[in-house]
Length: 169
Image: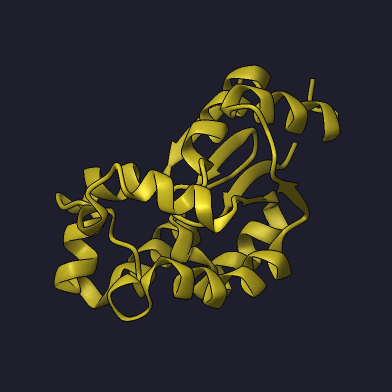
């Protein structure tokens, strides 16, 4: 069976929901940010801020294109993955792409509780969170096979809805 990949803004809940979906369907979960950190020996924030190795988007793209298989796997790539067309084409072909459309007010609330600089948000310095969302939203919508529209109670609630809607269990 093909896998699942989540797209959406930083702070949208891709990893939290992805972990829960993977647990519910007994599939492997891959947080691409952590996968990259293990292999590059640097966080995505350090990579983005230092432009190490050609930039974060190129590194993300390289790992997605090199990944052996997405079958029975749930992946949460970074929010900037939508700028990597070839990687997104592969995810679109081999996974059900789920867009978590979290409202800007919720994203801002979550960002206020975090160290945004360490998150490695491509375009954040130039555009701010609202500008990044405006730039990316059309791409998230373009690649999405399924869109989660606010509101949902929490990550468990949303994961259960996704599993039911996609008839995964």
